[in-house]
Length: 172
Image (cartoon, rainbow, N blue to C red; front, side):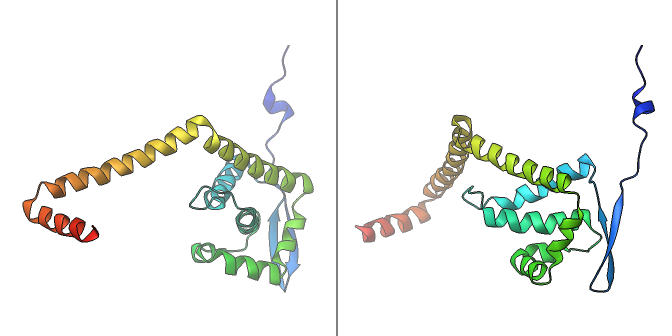
C-alpha cells in the first residue's frame, strides 16, 4: 500500500526572517522555490561570460551578489543598477549589504552557489567540446558567408566595382 504524497508533504509557505539594517526592516527569504532559483541562476549566467566566452570569477561574484540580494530580499534593485553593476556592487560591499546574505541558511546559499558554479563548468565544457567548437565555427561561417554575399552584390553594381578597383590599386 502506498501513502499519498500530499499526506506526507503538506504545502508550506516559504519562511522569512526580518532584520533591521540602517533603520530599515529587511525581509529575507529562507528558501527560494526551485522555479525562481532556476531563473536566478539563468540571470547570473547571462552576465558571467564576457564577449569571448570567458567565465570571469569577478563577474560571477558581482552578479551572484546583486541577483541573490534581489531574489532573496525585499531590496529593490533596478535594471539601471544592474546595468551599472560595478558601481552597484561597490555600493553593496561598502555599505555592508552583502552581510544580509548571512541570513540565508548556509545550506541554501551554498547549494545556490554550487549550482551556479556547476552550470558555468557545464557551459565551459560544452564550449570547448567538439560540438561546441563546431557550432561556433558554423556561426562564424554564416557571418562570413553573409559578408561575402554582400560583397558579391556590391560587385554586381558597375559603379561600385570602379571604387573597389581604385581602392585595391592604391593598396598595391
